[in-house]
Image (cartoon, rainbow, N blue to C red; front, side, top):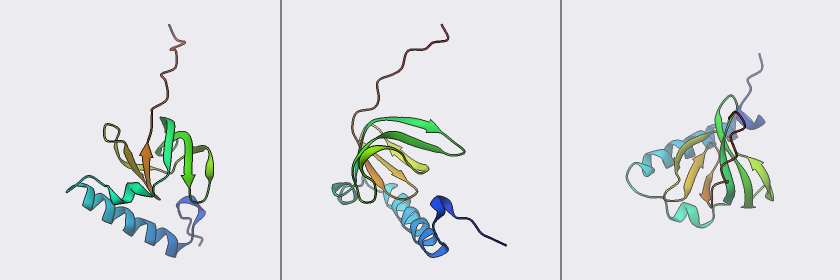
Length: 107
């Protein structure tokens, strides 16, 4: 039997990510994340995307693995667009401007 983990990671890294996510979600119920956002990559021109799970699409800057380019994030677990942050499965993002709404072609 083969166990598959999100993002193709191994069991140890997936468990570490889940523990960090749970710790962050618990802290966020008590206060606004600040220190975590100082080193977080920024995501500009972002918009929600739907795959099997919800994520964000946008131009990332300062990502420790992906650098600066267009990305689709891992699953979003918490987002506060007014305060400018999101917490995905793997990390915090500082949210810049959202993408401009697209014209509805159904009309």
